Amino acid sequence: MLRDGGSLAAVFQAKDSAEYWLLLRIRTRDTPDGRLERIGYAAPVWIRRHTGQEVNLTWPHARAVLSQAEGMLREASDREWLERMAEVAKTEGSLPSGVERVP
Image (cartoon, rainbow, N blue to C red; front, side, top):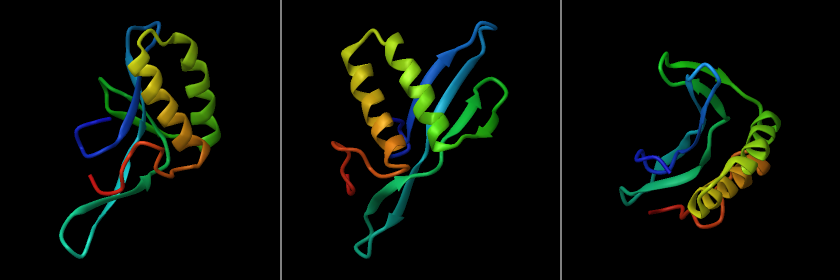
């Protein structure tokens, strides 16, 4: 989870040493009592980190990328976040289990 309140990112390094992110930006709104409420995730974006170049992805494409990434994980905590990202992609933007609407 990123420090913006809940966006999710999977980071990849390509053969050319460039870093890429599969980013799911959090969608939020203000509640009547002034708190920030998470309402879901925007469509996935593929970002080349060093240039800032962004490409919009479809949810099926994001699911395919996340499925391929599963075999590359080394840490249990990475698996937990990847599973949450996969859940978001499967529901096409809904909040995954374990992520509260109002932090």
